[in-house]
Length: 82
Image (cartoon, rainbow, N blue to C red; front, side):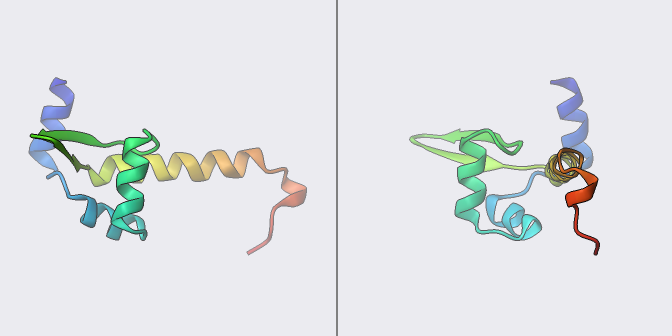
């Protein structure tokens, strides 16, 4: 938790709209992925509704990991040359 506090002091949390812009998808998709635990998110409970906040560095790391694991699972003979 202390590490998270240090990161938060250096990097501001962003809203689902800002995270969606960064990920190039809709805010609804970002919220769904957060609820499903597929992307790193921090829930702020405000009464009945949950508000999600994100750190762009965590999202970027998750996307890089997903891309590298996708590439490593595809045999070289099946990869497209780009």
